[in-house]
Length: 494
Image 1 (cartoon, rainbow, N blue to C red):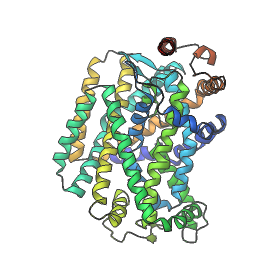
Image 2 (cartoon, helix red, strand yellow; image 1 turned 180 degrees about the horizontal axis):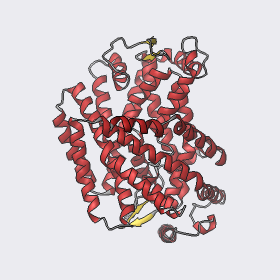
Image 3 (cartoon, rainbow, N blue to C red; image 1 turned 60 degrees about the horizontal axis):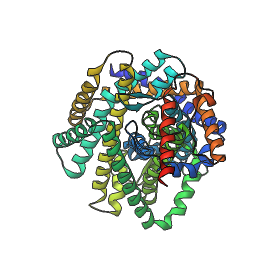
Image 4 (cartoon, helix red, strand yellow; image 1 turned 90 degrees about the vertical axis):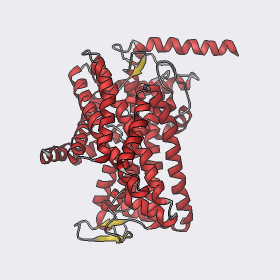
């Protein structure tokens, strides 16, 4: 079974998917006239625009929920692995992927907003919704929803929990059973509190941990500031095959940089539109731009923090293309595998007694918030299916199931579960990327409409019919009335 799953993963996660993500990012960058540059100021401004309501979360909460899924163990372990097998130049190609992927994140997140619904008094959106309502393909939406529930609800949370338990055991000697109990209690408290509690927890945990991680990385870089110009030169020369030592690795640098960049920032994979659809905004483009910026935060900030830490301290290895040895070996111990261990070694070399513990804590929070994001994605897709079949019991079963999965995963992980989870996420990515290529017109019209209203000095308000969308967007009439009433009330108070 494991061999069969690995074979399927070899097809699903083939270079075709990786370069499809890159090509789609370039295509949408051109179609949106590189909105990731033109609207950078708007992205930052919109982070704090809008407030939560009874129906939806604020823009910042939606961003935090999205980052909870994007910022994970891949930001620590994935960057180290990319450098190990692709050389320092892989970091440059991760930046390229983030830059291009921001436009894809805008398209999918704007679609999540355009075709969202209100279910049980809360906004819900995501690929399953826009495949059915936008493309008119219910079967396609159901296929995506089933893939998301299996991958994010049943398989991947246990693997994330295992990485938490391992890191806490290695750094602090905390028994895995104790870590399992802590994760189960915290997760249960959050998910049984509903979407608002998930959003509130993400709003607090994600910015705090990401900022703390970046600050520690900046301190380490500043302590090696004299080496920074050499490191930057090394990255760019390696990326284009100009470095004497890493020149032969240009193909691997591109391959591993693109692969890890796509895996980390998740642009186009269909995860971001779920929290994006929950946001309480007056125009879909607002949340689309916020979600585009989340790709920058994930890769340009957090992944770069890891990359610079490794390179300025020299605590990394680079494997020869044929695997026969090392082009560069900065971590002599063969017992330390490529991944989080390199990051721990880099921090420990500068901050003895603190670095390893800090990385373990960072992994705890990054992986825990990823589990939260997985739960929310699975819950949203169950809500989608429940509109087709009566499934009132399914949400409760998911809550109990995911707690059981993380407890089991903390003490024992299965390679088969990891493989099946990867298969589900890979299928989500294929379905979503193909779908948004067919459904790009409403998202592009939405961006054009937003830009027009900004030029006219208005606070943009979305009218689907004016954007060529005439079906399945009735909710926007209610949203417009609510925001108009709020604007009128604000004028009266003044």
